Length: 275
Ligand SMILES: [Zn+2]
Ligand SMILES: [Zn+2]
Ligand SMILES: [Zn+2]
Image 1 (spheres, helix red, strand yellow):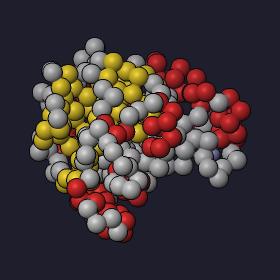
Image 2 (image 1 turned 180 degrees about the vertical axis):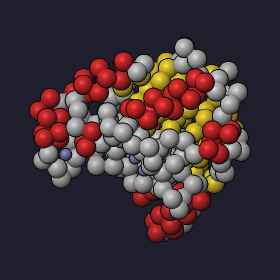
Image 3 (image 1 turned 135 degrees about the vertical axis):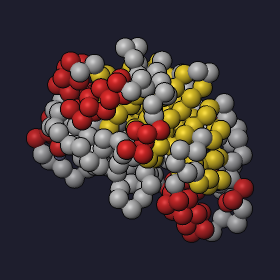
Image 4 (image 1 turned 60 degrees about the horizontal axis):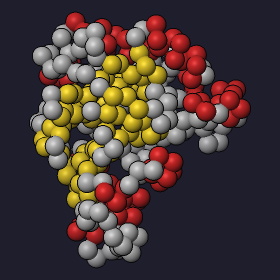
């Protein structure tokens, strides 16, 4: 399997849209891996994770054929992960022809509600032929094409079941864990005995300490150590930190030097990891 990171920033982007802080100014000046767009990834060039407003740019920048996408997994309703109005572009007259006719959008009850609202606001009569909202429940595996996917609970928005996703194919397994603090106990109870080949963890706070809602590197390392203890990972598992806020106030190089000492790769826009 392969994951490509298309966008690696938190909600505001980095440099942030309206911000002139030292961290954003440095990112503007240095460019390259310090430019981070909103959160999105793709597995094996075909299974899309999240749908932020930067999706259009990602499709252009990385040459991804969105007309052939069949499935999108959505983690939660924050706008850096889900911008439902752009889903309407799947239907005519915005898309006249696609390699696939309709697209499945999987998520929690809030995602399904937001998507259905956007679909009805569009006024396109047959929009339901083109976009299929599918509500998924935590800890209940479901098939997405050749993948087996399980939504696990994140620690993120108090009144929403935010998901992290376990994605499996041909004996390989990825845990995609954004946005979340240190996992809730219900998720820990589900994990033992499930071994991952790659684990992508929230690191919104950079090198800072933050347990709830989001994480920083020390907390991502706590998760890593517990996963190792509980047999969910071993020395071959690739651990990656991703989803950074400008408030982390470090360059990519500084983040990546520190992360390396904890055995983590540091995601940047465009990075690909094979496992
Ligand atoms: Zn986010
Ligand atoms: Zn800033
Ligand atoms: Zn969020």
